Image 1: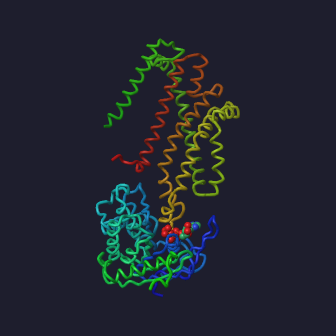
Image 2 (image 1 turned 135 degrees about the vertical axis):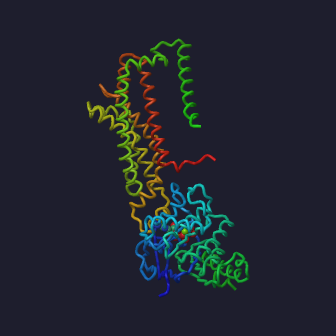
Image 3 (image 1 turned 90 degrees about the vertical axis):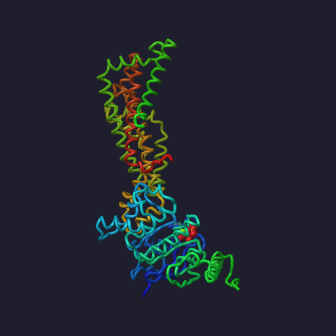
Length: 264
Length: 253
Ligand SMILES: Nc1ncnc2c1ncn2[C@@H]1O[C@H](COP(=O)(O)OP(=O)(O)OP(=O)(O)O)[C@@H](O)[C@H]1O
Ligand SMILES: [Mg+2]
């Protein structure tokens, strides 16, 4: 199969203090190599759980997760992750933070090449000249850029982003969307992006998956034709407005605030 | 700037001594009520050798007790920080142990290990000071945001790697905060034991002999010597904190 990420019929239930919590229910998602899949869904529906399953941080009760033709049973070094919280290590410089994965993952790069690789990524996201700064000296947006570099430094096949821009203000967020396109043009990866922002999912994804409420399955999948780098103005075309309306309606269904019949 | 940091506290100290001297002189207090700084110097010169020998005893026993507390406290903290079950099991025990006033434990230990001066003093210094260290390490570890763990775990890092690269350095600021408390506590523990223990050693014993001989200047001289030792120990910890956890300091901007 040509898919790099295959989530096949995955169900998962957490044991909590209040009894079993059925989170995922026969979830199916496929992302082709080089694809970028944006996942939206109601709060608490299991999006972060999905990222942890793909990363191999946990194993689903039922169903299978496949990466590059191999079944995921444990974490693997071909994955890069970034979260809403940039989780930079405050005692390290930005450069050393970005290089952290190279200390864990086996790499063929020499020390000098590792530094060059980190510097290249930092320059790509617009953090040239901040290599020796400490995270506390950077703004929220800059920290998130550094976190993005760290998730890419070991050239992962799969990039998993869990609401990476969720805590940023609207302008910084739009800047980072454009940075993401720039990064994507330079660095080959297959991505999964969890987001709460429908415009973000349209701007960055070439496929948008709407997850249903808990227990969640893939309620709706929208393919977005991708032709070259996008600009922010594309979000204000009639096509985009129409797609946004459809997604918004799907979210309302997922939240249980609307039914499919309301669409008309 | 650096000079100011040394000179200002020195001036403050001199002013304090002058004030003390004046207070005693103006009120015409006799020696047995309140010794004055001018009485201290003769006391130091007369007992110079004792001060050095006993001061060293107090110092090394405090430091050994503290080192033990660091090793054991860190270990207990790690166990409680990494395992929910162990935390639930050990926490009430620790709190109960800590709640017992150490002044009541001192005579018991002194009797249990009578004559074993070094051992019982180190033991008390350790017992009194390991608690804040254990608690700070366990809190530091258990409040580590899960994302920090996931960043390394998703790359296949072992628990040991996660501990060395993230959990330990991230806990250092809390650890040093606790160490500053612990160093003072250990010092108190050492002195309690030295005073209570019959025929004890260390500055505490010197204080006790001053008491039995009604040598008030000696007692005050011991107090000042203890204060100096306490300050030295405290600032050694502060210096170590600067070196190992200086990154956590907020720059005043
Ligand atoms: N390890 C766990 N043990 C028990 N329950 C869990 C665990 N992880 C997540 N949950 C619960 O599972 C549900 C889904 O969690 P998850 O974090 O995947 O949701 P989410 O879609 O990412 O939410 P959000 O939009 O708030 O980020 C939540 O109700 C959460 O409380
Ligand atoms: Mg989440």
